[in-house]
Image 1 (cartoon, chains in turn green, orange):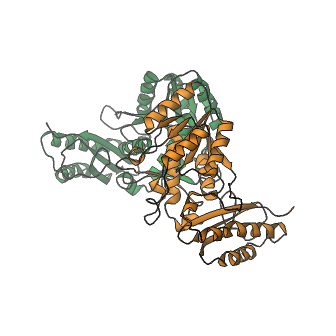
Image 2 (spheres, chains in turn green, cyan):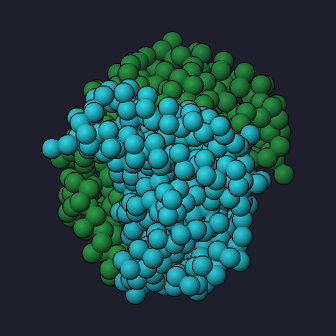
Image 3 (cartoon, chains in turn purple, blue):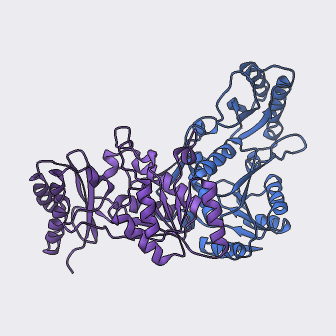
Length: 283
Length: 283
């Protein structure tokens, strides 16, 4: 496994691989790799000749009051995980390498990014898109792997790839959960022993919502109301949003007449957690 | 010479060329090819194995009150010129192919785009950057050729390439002029017989400004004042801006202490023309 800290090093590796006609897969991460990331990496390993994992805590996607400094970092553990999963190249640039002295070019995806997580995290998706586009241009992967847990990010990155004609395919991968159902996230590390069981309310509410849809309840407000009541039982929980949206443009629906996402963001104490589930009206 | 009207056709050609390890050069144009474009094409022909000319009147860079519908188009003449100049591939997509039903992803370059031409053409550089990025992702050129006449576009595209890590090099090419000094532009076609001689005032004023700098006049306001007086002599001329700016960030300077651009935009009747000249303080 090679570790490249500069764009030039990464490009040289990639050029060699390309010359041999191999397919390149990219798993973009902010490190603190957990089994969710590793599911992406293993799928990439299965499907591509050459597996690249980028590890970069992207400052452009953190707001001024967010947890950039506190965000979990353990590069040695990440490298061990990548070695175990037979990663070929870890690309781990620093901020100087990624954004230099002045960075002026930014990518926005209209309409998909101004609500849900975008409302409480202005500039977040601009930061995500810009960093992801940079990684796409540096690594030039054939395939890139993103988790479905970050549903809005996935929809926005897909739209960016489509609209800007990046010559690659996005492979979405299912959310990995603990046995109890908590979606894996680096931010779960922030939960203390009292908060952790309460964090299960996210998936519990999503399952409840999905069960209502299977029973034929298709009115979004009715479903959201019951989900809200479930979450409000947890003393540490503060709901940021619960929303039922179409899959392409992530616009809120009032009636579930086609496959939709139920998406939510809930603070459990300080940490803000997100999760989602796909639902479809019964046939 | 191959003409590709779809992204898929263009990509297939490019993939073939890539497999043979050839270098690819791109000259992005809006058609109505004149000797300025052809200088770009010939330089590309000299420097690259495979020459791509894109011909696409990009609606995203026209304002609602601008000349999108009237913009000169002559695809047959353009193809003849490309054949003469030994172009390998003409990429001429339509709007459906480039922007589809809904296009949501846009690229902005902060700071460089909100003044000079950006002030009277809001959204112009966002449209330019987005279309150019799409072309870069579709054609994946090693080299791309841009004219120095569009100095702000050149600086912004260079910045976008740098900041978003496009894996290519921008080659700027000198402005081509008529014997009298008028910078070639597709919009010169709009000038009537009375306006055409008056349009020479742009380059006359630039030369006057440059001559002042060579004589050691380094105060921007003094230079701009004399240039303004020269242009105001022409009855059809209406100055949009005359500005002296640094070459990297295009910020106005008050004293010329390093190489700068004198840039201007002047309406001659209806058509709005731009031009610029590079100046440096005497040694």
